[in-house]
Length: 201
Image 1 (cartoon, rainbow, N blue to C red):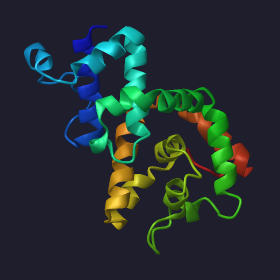
Image 2: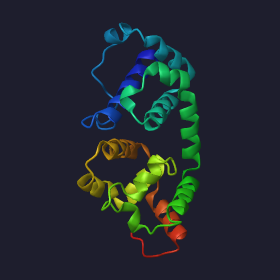
Image 3: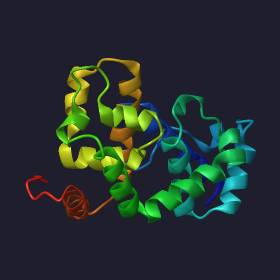
C-alpha cells in the first residue's frame, strides 16, 4: 500500500466519523484529495511510515480502531495516531476477537440491577445504557449490537437533545456498518443471559 493510498484511507475513515453526509462504504472509500495535494502536506512522512508497517487490511483496521476509540475524532491528529495508536489498535483487536464473550459479560453487568426495558428509559435524562458506557463499564461494540437488536438510537435521537448523546449516537451510527456480525447469534446470547424466550430479535 502506497503512502498516498494510506492517506486516502485515513481521510475516508476520518470523514466517515466526522461528517454525517459522508459514508465510507457508499462512496467506496473515495475522497476528493489528489496526489499533488498529498505531496504538499508536511505530515506525509507519517503515512509513509504506516504504509511500510501495515498491510491494506491492517491500515483500515488501524485507523478504524483509533477513530472508534476516540471521544472527539475531530481532535485526532495523524502524528498522535502513529505514535500512540498501536495500543488502541491492539485493544480493539482483542475486543473483536472475543466479541461474543465481551457482549455476554456486558449484558450480565447491565442486567444485574435492571430489566432490559429500563436500560433504554430516557424519561429522566440519559438512560442507563448510555450512563454505563460513559462510565467505561460497557463497550461501544455492545452499544452497537444492542442498537442492531433493539434500534434504540431512534428513540434516543427523538428524546435526547444534548451534545453528549449526539456525539455517542454518531459514533454508534458510523461504527455499525464496520461491525459485521451474525445478529441471530447475539440474540441467542442475549436470550440465554436473560433466560427468557420472549425477546424478539
